[in-house]
View 1 (cartoon, rainbow, N blue to C red):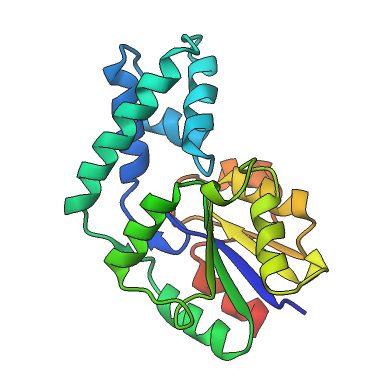
View 2 (view 1 turned 120 degrees about the vertical axis):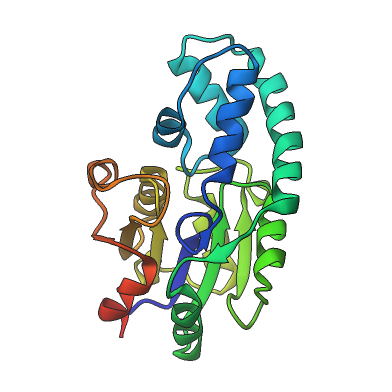
Length: 221
């Protein structure tokens, strides 16, 4: 039986209109490259953002040393973008979170974003610990980010769960699905409410692909 849900944030529980990837695209192009939003989403979705920039530069045959300047520009621009950004929950997610927690299951939000960005998102939504979720784990909390399973293992440790088969992992990117597989999660769900499309998610072979995470009610309850 599933006891812990580890849910990605942007695109899975939170709709922030891909502003992170749009800002990342702009920062890369500001450095003299030419990359589209689709290319950024395909390459970078779900990853810790400095790692994502390095991977993208490799794919563009760019200079690895440009990563530092791009990341600095990206971080500064994102901070500005978030000040005015309207953030809302993915449709149905708030009721889903409340129902899951009322049933006694734990909910951990996890993300490849920094803690600062993640906290900004939560603040804008006015989500509360012990109401909407039980804990939040970001790329800052682990040494190695996705697809390494350390964020999931940290979530399990926090709630005294030793068997990964009792964990559900859900996300909107192939990296999320790989993270769940690497942790040995008992249920892995891809959702179409965020960064990547069905064919991109299917390549990673999740157990289920749903339009949005609230559709998982049918298999949880």
